[in-house]
Length: 508
Ligand code: N01
Image (cartoon, rainbow, N blue to C red; front, side):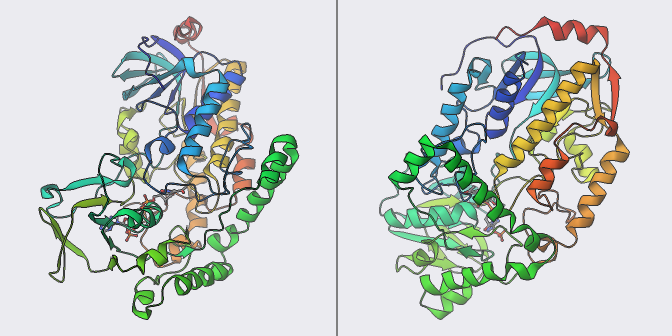
């Protein structure tokens, strides 16, 4: 989508950051509510968020598409049960175009800093396109937006092509090349089978073997797609069935690990089916409880590892030279291209360094002290009128993040309604309400497989606290966020100065 050359308004009532599922959803919901005084800042050149950025070969959703889409934007045209990235990106573009909100999006625009001004009851925001003020910020900057690069000795000296999975370089011709992939997470297991189709040789560097269950993917039949289009109730029934099927995983994750035994059996069966060599089978068999890390899905990953031109390397990487990866056992494996599929900065989101609250500290500083604590995954004490979509402890290992995003958007919209009706200038969660919320979360977390399953994962922060996942059903999350519970908040009446601002309106 083209980058507008318009100037930013000096003030808006609502500033939305990011144009992925969260930011786009926020724009649509604001618009629907008649809150038209908003802008969306997006550093990329298009909507789509993670589905714009991740274009690696094989990129696809591992949650069924009927559920991994907006409830208010059903798509009868999904080709597959797990749709590929280009379809998801195209879907988001279509939803954006049909929403009639794109004139308020500023692409190619990075927010540099947002600083709360208590007297004015405003966020003072600087961007690389100019400054503006906003009464509220809805941040949809995404938990998986900032690639994490491995700290491996000599990696900067590598003379060949090197890129992260989320920054795929499509100009690099991989045909016949020797390629190394570092990582065996959700991205890597989608990349490796595609890479092996074209590369001359692939070395896969595995630090921890993941659980990979079969991917029950299939193309929707013409009859199904006809029914989705003509009888919306059919599509809704699919979505509902997928939703509840996914919810069945929750007890296994959160308090009764034994219920995940079928998933383990499926993963072990997948290994057996895909790999004949007993030694290789053993090396890809995880040594922790299933579910402790994200359960991955693929039919092609294990057979690819078994191919003659693919080597699984489990020795620790000692260093990278100008043209090779050297493992701790001294073996040097020459390569032309290095693909780094090592994940993202998740527990500490980069934007947190740029949002400065009431007492002059950044979200990152406060988060470091309080373990990214927030209230209902959405609001933070000390940061009035800030709403984070996909904030701490809203992530999922089993179901659709779009469901969580919509739950949060309902809460945010009710907060905005409450502010308007009561002429509140600020809402800020009380410290005691936030503490009680987090105490309960961390208490529940102790029993989960993510804490007890014997693995190290990006779900945990530097202190070993799980600040990433939601430890209950998504149904419960939706119920808890259905209405804005103003009793958990400190509120301030609207000051005259910001009332002036709020009627000024945007001219985007
Ligand atoms: O990243 P990851 P990802 N040396 O962090 C290894 C979502 N997603 O991009 O397990 C060597 O999961 C690391 O090893 P270990 C989804 O939520 C969704 O794959 O830490 N290896 C691991 O194997 C997912 O969970 C879809 O020991 C190093 C890998 O790199 C999230 O994105 C598709 C290393 C990183 O795995 C992230 O997935 C794809 C080092 N220094 C992704 N550092 C959907 O379909 C890290 N590793 C929706």
